[in-house]
Image 1 (tube, rainbow, N blue to C red):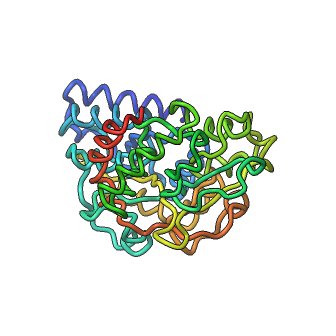
Image 2 (image 1 turned 120 degrees about the horizontal axis):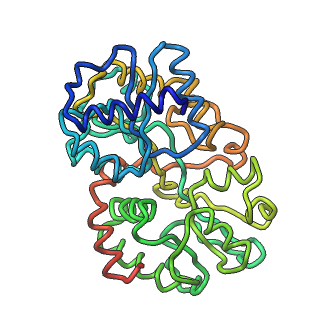
Length: 342
């Protein structure tokens, strides 16, 4: 963020907290609350400003903190847009009342229906497939779908993140949507029984665990591995030839997709600029940059993949409604607690 943008964002937030009226905000600006923490997103912001002349002021933080902040700021909030990662957080923002429905034919036409909120309060802009990785030296018959991760033959072989992680929650929420609550609980119990170690670390740590021999099978979002193909990632890139991968459930529902997206703030003072930015994120230029800059899959089907992402190969994606999946997250968390998934 430039010093001017950072100063402007802080001033806006201070004015809101002091109760200053939002009418003082200048035209030609956009106030963005973002929990995306990728330096490569700078290009998205600068290109939008170059094309439109609209200055982007940013406040960055963790998703839950930003949502709570928007709630506390209420009608005085300077926020125009919330950008975050994972469907569950987008749904959390919607349920908190900090987003609003918008009418945009551009977003409706370019973004597949299953990757947007049923009430048009949030839209997905990039995807990561959550797939199975394995040590090729030790696993000759890897699990071909998520259900198979619970097979007793993989006892003591599986690494995974904790149940408090949103990626874990959304994956189980998708299993609930696709297979039902009872089957999902049986699956979760089977995965717990197959753990090589207690859940810990992030997605890159799951890949490192394969390299180090802590476990033989893990799950990670694709962009962590694609990044290791494109540039040096400590503990992964030097051993990429050791790691195999499976896009799960290719004969059934397809690979679970994790979403990054955003919505227009409920009290957006620069609503029209916010909609322009959302539409820009669905443009070919921005969609290509999500792939090239952060190794993600575009949501617009006609946009080409970057080299690192294309190396992962073709696959079938689960086209389940992510809006419906997000509503299952509370049930998923209850199941995690019941089966002892830490």
